[in-house]
Image 1 (cartoon, rainbow, N blue to C red):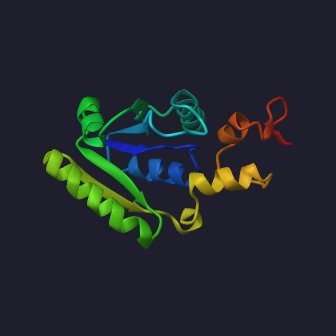
Image 2: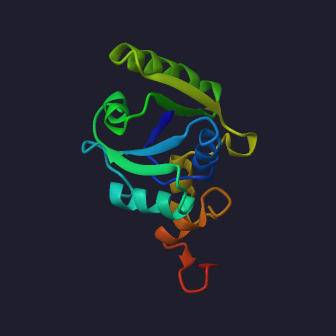
Length: 163
């Protein structure tokens, strides 16, 4: 079975990595699909977000990383996936995620959605929160993988030390 884990990943967080690693246990191949909506303003473009994900996950043979524009179900079909993986951090995520799952199922009845509840230690993390903390000079190292710190210029790339 092939699953797709869509998101913006702007940037990828340790919470995203937790979902990726747990999703790998329920699918044979996981496609991490980076949404690239040209009408949105991103902190990192799709190329950089893909690079951060690849740098964060290493060389996992059962994980592919792609970008997509448009509907998740279309990206899933194109990738050959029949399962959408979504993470839930809090009850506030639930209503929106369920509505999206229902719409996706109406658009393509062959595609199901599975929700993975965030691990407690990551349940409060969001990319928006990470960017705000970083914008004000806060330490984000406990929330994101080292690859993100390097891409954001928070680590000295020669020594792996925080600035």
